[in-house]
Image 1: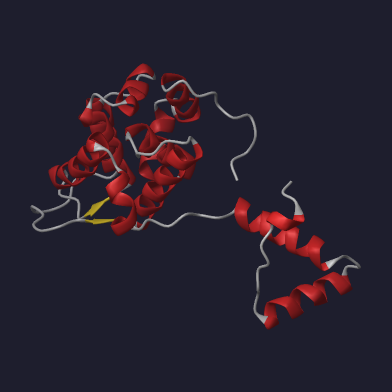
Image 2: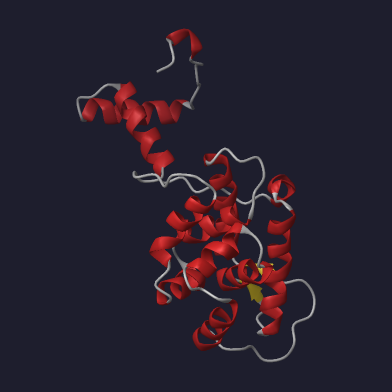
Length: 205
């Protein structure tokens, strides 16, 4: 706990202070106690945002290659978007990063995932020209990848962080496919073991 001299005063708008004060009075609590609970809950549910102009420079060569491969996989299916399933295919197709190693160790292979994507979504009609946009879930996954790198104390964002972001989000087609392979619940532990990090026992906040 930092000493009082190390803490900085934070100004909040009057209407927020009045609302917090009202809650404190209603529940017979201190203002500080209410603020602490609200801040904790806010941090627990916080979802980082994907800011390409700020974050993309942190992605190393292999991670950027994954982001290049994902639209290629989407086009191969004539899909008009880049979804989590295409990111998963990009991780596998890259082939040499920690993410590909972890997935292969868990029995998740490129051809099998391609077949699963075709079964789950099918193919679009007609070829796709021009740029293909990320879905909102992919942007969230990439933001989580940056957050995973930060949590692990890594300066660059690598393929393993993208994979960790995928499973931490826990939704989308990629997570469903990993679940059908029986791998979803084991990805994080296997990935962290490959990079020499112990898996945390508590919940991520």
